[in-house]
Image 1: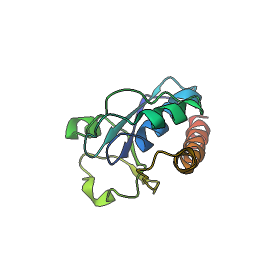
Image 2: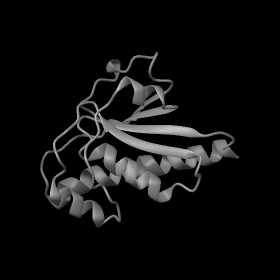
Image 3: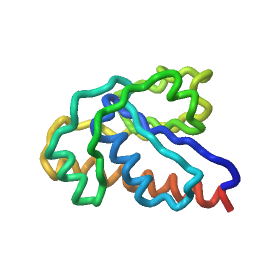
Length: 139
């Protein structure tokens, strides 16, 4: 990839889906010119300890304070990926968002392992696909 690229993963509260996508992308990304962050449309409450532990089974660190979305943060991004089925894409004004991709990953407020896996596995698959696409574009 010739130039720097900023990617932002967004979900409703930045408590799980966007954090998992960010952590997994950071884990697999080899191109240091690509920087990723995550945020929530609304800054959420602190993360659930069970979700943090289940993410660790995938070797993902999602600890930290949830981040809320701002117009400044949006303007800094080259690519915004909405990883939520419960956030309308119409909220994202084109003057703040250069490129928007929507992955309709369902939220689940339950913390059981099987339920969390239903969120993590599709996210990993989507992030893998994104990473492969970006690597092809870089060549």
